[in-house]
Structures are given as structure tokens and as C-alpha cells.
Amino acid sequence: MSATDVLRKVPLFSDLSEADLTGFAAVTREREYPKNSVILFEDDPGDSLYIVSSGQVKVVLIGEDGREVILSVLGDGDFFGEMALIDDEPRSAHVIAMRDSQLLVLRRDDFQMQVTGHPKIALKTAQGAGAAAAAGGREDRRPGAARRQRPRGAPAHGPRR
Ligand code: CMP
Image: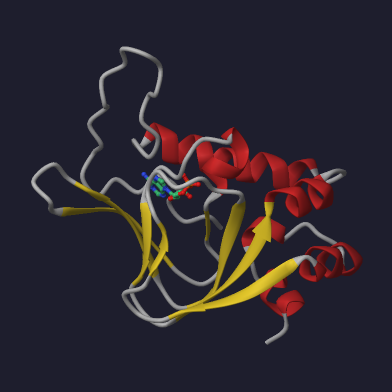
């Protein structure tokens, strides 16, 4: 399936014309991640947004006892990585492939350039980041702020459709 075909099915891009979809598709890159591979590491710098073309990924934090806490499981048409893209902070969680997964990757500069003139996409992306932050996906990094407890298993984005 071409990048345009994938994007056409993604709720985030549902309001785009064919020409605009083609514009976004032109600046995406396809990446394949085998099952169990780490796509993003918490605290790494991040400058890309990821869209799941196919497969399944999980957003996780590692608790102080070393146990994995799953914040969200994402599948076809879902996106992640928007928080670092928007606020320029390090990645708020690990993202790991639960199955062999194909992703589309959009770099910040390209995303920002394409999103100009599409306020709905900017808004939906920001809403995703806001929901993730509210569910504990972004710790408060201000000096003196305590690390916030994250609700176990609380999905931040819910169905993004
Ligand atoms: P970012 O911080 O760039 O990288 C990790 C991503 O995981 C983050 O963007 C969100 O897309 C996603 N994420 C973080 N916290 C949550 C959460 N609580 N629920 C769902 N997704 C999250």
C-alpha cells in the first residue's frame, strides 16, 4: 500500500484533499520494526511523528521495580511521538513493537511545513499530546517538581478516530 493510501485511512488526516494527502505522503518515510524491537526510548530527544500503517505497538514506562507499565496499545491508523514533536521535550515513554509493524515517519520540519494551512491536523495532534500528558505521559520537569504517578493502563488517546 502506498503512503498516500495509508494516510487516507488515518483519522488524523481525514479532512485532507487528495492533493494535500499527496503532499504529506511525499515527506513520510516507511520504516519496519520487527516484533519486540524498541521504536522510541523514553528520554531520547525526538523530532518525528509516527503513524502505524500496520501492526501493533505499545507505549510503556518501566516502573521503579523494573516492571513494565503499559500506557496504551496502538494499531493501524494510530499515531504517536506527537508530544516531543510539539513541546520539544525528550520522549515521554518507550514505544515497542508488539508485532512486526510498518510505520510512517514524519519529521518535525516536514510536519510543520505541511500542517500550515491545516489547523484541524494541528489541533488533533495537540489534543493527542494533551491527552497523553493528562494521563501521565509527560512528567513535570520543572525544578522541584515531583515525578508524577502515572495511572496504570490509562489510555491517553483513546480511539483516535
Ligand atoms: P513522545 O513523548 O514524543 O514519545 C512517546 C510517545 O508515547 C508520546 O509522544 C505519545 O505519543 C505516547 N504516549 C505517552 N504517554 C502516553 C499515554 N499515557 N497514553 C498513550 N500514549 C502515550
